[in-house]
Amino acid sequence: WSLAAAWRFAERTGRKLVIDWRGSCYLDQPFTNAFPVFFEPVQDIAGVQVICDDRINQHSFPGPFFPAWWNRPAIDCAYRPDEQIFRERDELDQLFQSGQDSDANTVVCDACLMWRCDEEAEREIFRSIKPRSEVQARIDAIFREHLASFSVIG
Image (cartoon, rainbow, N blue to C red; front, side, top):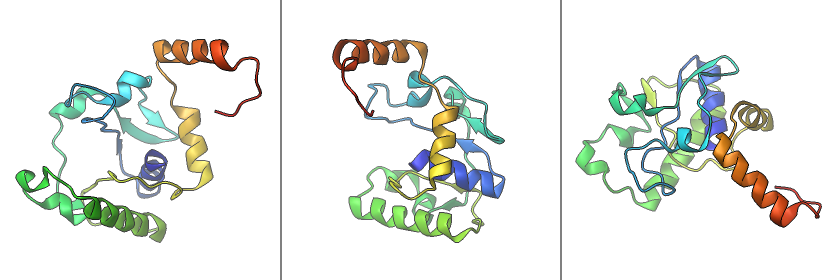
């Protein structure tokens, strides 16, 4: 949902979409972007330029940032309490729903925006990203082994 909401915002405002999933709980390497580990790289999603590979390790995101919390010195950002994450989620939701842009150069969408984007944005993301072949092979194997004889939604 967060990716779909961020994509819709980038589309509406003419911004690039950077998918930066470094620090993912699904990988042991904190500086590895999880997106290209699990999904085929994409350059564009329905007209929105996408950066989703490890080039982000050499990229410096220009400030100021939205939400404003991200403008703090890096040492102050090492720990983000739950209340801050919820506050950011609400600020992002208000911005995305407003139909406006932000004066910030970089908008950080790093909070769960579950059910906060339109269904067409979700569909566009699901049409545009594909699991890597080895991930898809594992999905197919699990389906054949455990689910093929059942009616399932997944």
